[in-house]
Image 1 (cartoon, rainbow, N blue to C red):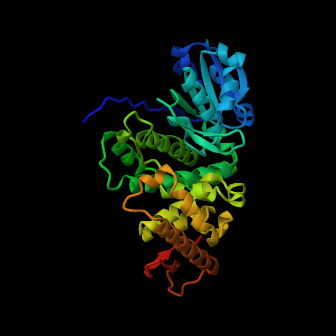
Image 2: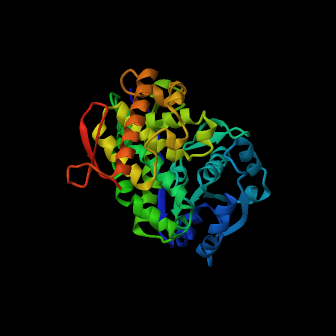
Image 3: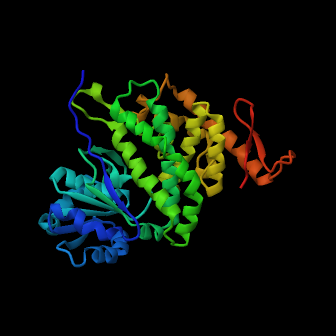
Length: 401
């Protein structure tokens, strides 16, 4: 049976001068804007924002700190702020938690939102959901919204001046998009919207591999380049579009629910977050990038896994458990946690914790072999490549950085 629904897609401006487009784009929504965001993010973007609206009727009446975490308690504080109450619209500025806080406030209290990401580490600026936390910093829930921000302004100069480690983690997170979505969509009755998401997801890996290393070098040197723009668009826009097309949860009819936006790579992250030494010392995207290798092992995609071993190694992303402060003894708990999250419901076939445990351990073993070969830098075959055996005993050539 067909049903009625609406999809709201993000629009965006990108470039070093994209803030000059602010007045024309936001003017249908009023004249008074309030900036809500992270302290550092607002400090670094304030001058460019004010220059962007100079000579127009648009006024930023205040810069309000979002509270430090995306929680409903901070949303309520924003709601009670006099400047926010006076504003016609909200400019959400900063990283994922800052934008998610502004997004949730605007969704709950019906204010227009415009997003201004200052780092390329996540796709929050373009998604229709927020990740919400408890006051103690633990995960609470996903907050699902009708629509993403009306428009997103991606200033590549500001992103180029952000810490390169955050872009590095963003690359690790976005690396999961194609593999997880295509995997989760397998054996499903695909309708138009998630089918579009799957198609867009298939374009998300190659820009990271082609431009990722150069983008990190340019970010380290604070130089806005084509590589930074391409990676930022992949992390913020491509991943955000995929998220909007592949998540349809909390419907009145549960049979209409689907969640294909993430899968086993993020399951590794959820399980790893149980271990403080991992969660506190390593970034979300860093952990997810190891999860990508685990998914590819679980699915028997050994050739592709070895390509990602090469890429991860080339930019310092993890290939083994020990690189994210975990041990083989931690793996059963990781798998048990994975079996409790929404992604597990959509894993194709009949997933078991034992199968996932075996995949993680096999990935760790293969990663150690890869790292050993890379360190030794010898193969005796005279072709400048190294050879490792996958879990099926097949010899695979891999380049060594």
